[in-house]
Length: 300
Image 1: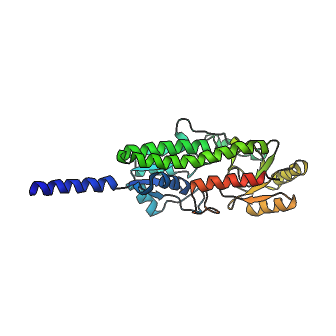
Image 2: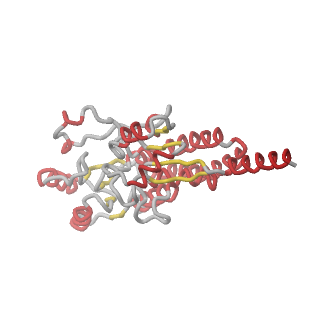
Image 3: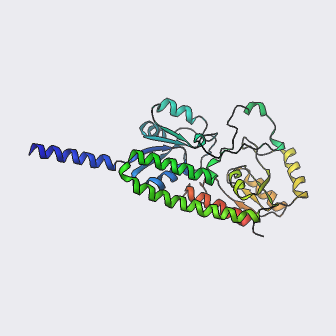
């Protein structure tokens, strides 16, 4: 009887361990939503940066600090997203595996753009991440990240391999649909340009061929000054643009003013998915919405 009781006790413990979710701390909701999609009930994901917060600056809450300390894995976008998080993780969880999208072999990285009105203070930023940090907007990177995350989950819970691969296939099917739409947009985008309140969509431009004509904020996400604005307006008088994309946190009022003054189609869009997306921050919905907006922009 004692032996039977011991066997049953060990069996129960194995079942509990097998179903114990993988604890993950992720930098912001885009990352978290992908992990929940891929891992389902087998992951417990805590988002470090609250929804509707700036991706370029944040303060660590006690709940996020606890999640970092207790995590089995930590996921970050990398680059200039959440500056300081790398040092925080190194101090609080030095032995926890960290997956950084920007550091993955084969990641698609496009250089940060330097428009004429962005040359100020160049020396101060020469040692910063030289690439555009909105790398989650790349379909190539989304595929790469999903593959890497799934492999990590399989290594952690090999008995759930079929479940994880099924979820991965569904995730990538949506990305494949967006890739097909991107190819269809390449013809429509020939010779067309657009402007934006913030340079967040270069990775989508990269696959559809549309060109950015100008921005209403600089590399520090600060609204451009009178001289730069005058230069942009003079440019808009000479060349037509298909639309202006307005982000909720970046020069929103100025974007609406430009759209009205030059009779330009305007679309509100949030690359973090915090606004205009249901559920808020959903990765696939954010990508899909972005392609919807570009399709509307290019439709006469």
